[in-house]
Image (cartoon, rainbow, N blue to C red; front, side, top):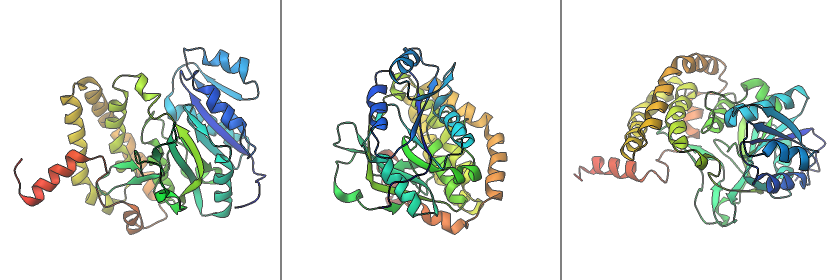
Length: 340
């Protein structure tokens, strides 16, 4: 590994009503063996987070929003500050996560070694250290992304450094020069899949995304999203089509679209069937409403694309996500002609 970096690095922590989680999160960042400054974006919390931060963490820089701007609006504020202050790297870190003391050191060393890479992500594991949350994100030829290894017991299967399609926004390092080229997070996403979107844009611009297994962080999975009923359903249905619509080159888009159409609408109907009618229909409507805007963004992204369609196609995983049990059963029955 490279020697200790002298690069200027910021770690951005978005916070919304996470007062109880902040001490463990911030203490772990303050204990990093790689020097960095910490920027907490206070996203309109009502649980006393702001007062707690001012009283207990004066060494942490604060950006204060009067309302919740979501993950994307929150981290973008921190990223803009990092850009303005001349940083070389900016990391994002969830307020419900805890970093190993060498988490940042290994990510920095990897990007300094691999200049072709714009993003480096860690081994993100459950808060008790027993299961994997993510070892990088994959994107399938169904237009469905998923975290590699999620839910699997900790093992040595993911102990090798590899190039990966995407990176979780919860504990990842970004190269500032890359962000200057491709832009920052799409705030229309608010939360969910914005990390896939920015990873996709990075790949289209010719940047690599790397998984660094020595870098480890611990995560309370869904600690924030579980606080709001219907939040995950709304955001998933709203955002998922935008990832494909904005980023897939035309020849790739039309190869994916038929399967994605079926998979996506199965999610919509399943959400309605289990009683999430309002969030599902609201998400679907918002997705359609902003589709013209995403079409304009698509033109800009594709105009600046630096890699071939075949290169992008070969980055994809050519199978359904592991947890897509109903879709797998449906398409297996169609292929075999079995009526169920």
